[in-house]
Structures are given as structure tokens and as C-alpha cells.
Length: 106
Image (cartoon, rainbow, N blue to C red):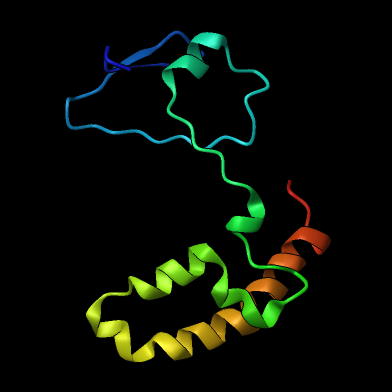
């Protein structure tokens, strides 16, 4: 917030420089106080608008976040855009399904 202080659970307060910017990504706000929520600028985007469809893995590169990434590649990678899209289509959905279905978090 405007105080430019990071307050930790331990009670430690870390002053931030004017040039510091911090972004936190959280799974949910179940333990956030109203003060915390009111200080945060939040954007909620439905997962279907971000993630590739599990039902159409061959169209993974058409998911908005990946499509935008491919469109914004720096000039040296322009020539590889189609190859990268093929790799995304081949591997992103199978790998995320492996993570989702087979692996557990410690």
C-alpha cells in the first residue's frame, strides 16, 4: 500500500523502496482480512479463458494466454512461432494432466 512497508506474520516490518513492486498470487482469500482485500487490486479470470482445454489438446496453442505469448514473441523467435505452437499442442495438455492426475504436492 502507500506506506511502502511489507509486514510479516513474525511482526517484522520490511521497508520497501519507491522503486519496489511486489505481486502476490494466492489460491484464495479465505484467511485474508478485509483490510488486506481492500488494499489489493484483483483481477479474476475464469480458468477456461486462460487454460488450454483438456478435451482439445491439439488446440492448446489457441488458449488466450498461449496465443498472446506466441503473438508477442521477440523478433529473433518469429521464425520459430509455428514450431513452438506445435510443441505446445503436443506437450502442454499431456504434461498438465500428468501433474493434475498423477503427482501429489509434498
